[in-house]
Image 1 (tube, one colour):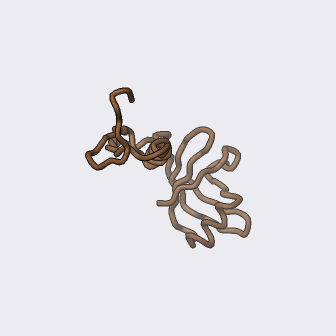
Image 2 (tube, helix red, strand yellow):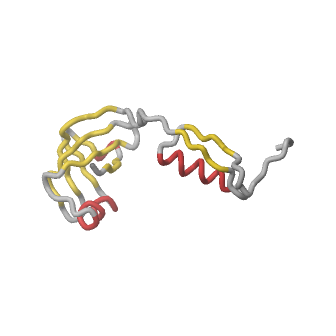
Amino acid sequence: MRKFFVESNQIQNNKIEIIDEDVNHIKNVLRLEIGEKIKIGNKLSGENYICEISNIFKDNVVCKILEETGKNVESNIEITAFQGLPKADKMELIIQKGTELGVTNFIPVSFKRSIVKLSRKR
């Protein structure tokens, strides 16, 4: 199920109005239609909703809130990455992207065929 994020002022009563670039993404890229379900997250409060698209207009998409799913945004799965030592300063990028994907633990490993070798000082 696709997830979109909105500001608090876009949530009114039992409806959520999606505006800006997400409208084009819903209409033209994903080609979602009236009656399809999507997830919507409030950027400020972290609340999540399961919604059904009720109207698609030129500048906005109106969704009806079916269910509020709460604020739990973290996965209940723990992922540990055993990462071989990379050259240069690539470890920071690996940690950043891995964290975005849900990795919770990183363990750097020096392999026999690794180019980077650690000395006792390092």
